[in-house]
Image (cartoon, rainbow, N blue to C red):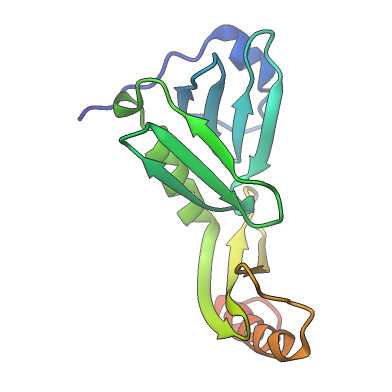
Length: 170
């Protein structure tokens, strides 16, 4: 397998204004004439021509991405209640986009711990924004009620532990 940088069309580049210092790391053409772009700051999805940015979210909003090479499909799971984003890649075996996505999500995770609570699991993490700021987040698994006092107590204790371990105030 070899990777090449997908030739990002000019109209897609123009639709993606980059912040000062932000760079494009990888891109992949999508089925249906769209494009997925990994920048140093964000995951960006541009729709078909005329180009509009359909999705632009920071890496710390991505819980995980699951790539199915058989189907050339990348499923993005978000940390909030947003529906998963399914990207069908054209020429998936020749793009570094899935790897860039994985690396950027991993870069954004400073420390994480998963705890069992009534109803399932909660992942508590300290994440990093593109400008280096640290913050904590709790990602509840399906069926978990973060408002349940039994759950909240465990999550609060875990959050204090990971924040302290990463140097954030508890």
